[in-house]
Length: 132
Image (cartoon, rainbow, N blue to C red):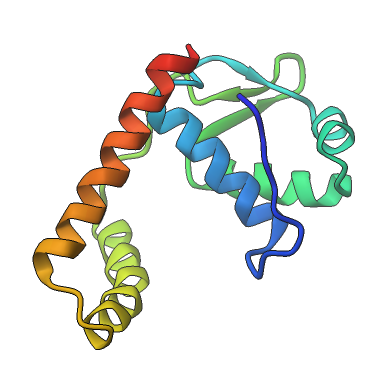
């Protein structure tokens, strides 16, 4: 999996890193139990501060996407991904609400919004099969 960060983006680097790892898992490019680079190694490879990678890894661990072992290092959660909880649904609702509100202000229809969601879903679920 190739990590591509936009250093000019308003999105914090650690968030971009988290999003790309989660997308790699969702697409199948990263498999359960698969090792990830160490904090130092990944920071060096992508040219960011090791505290940035450490923050991303810590948050991914808290959310249940990875495990961090002293001997094994960082691995994709081998016991399955976190499920959909009421808290997760609430988080999604609050994050999507302003996006949908802006789309409505710009004149997008529900069908256009649904098409975008379906397109992104297809891109993610099919991209990993090409990278595995």
